Length: 51
Image (cartoon, rainbow, N blue to C red):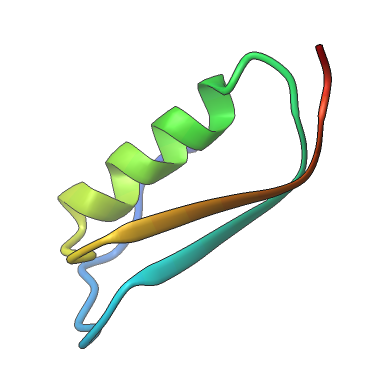
């Protein structure tokens, strides 16, 4: 149930913010869950990346 999102009723894009992105797995899974819940567009944003 960690990636369950209730149905969304939004009229525009959803901004997804994460503090640090390493492999991108969390952003990928969260984006997928938001899209499946009805987000028309997901805009991922990270404060920092690890390379």
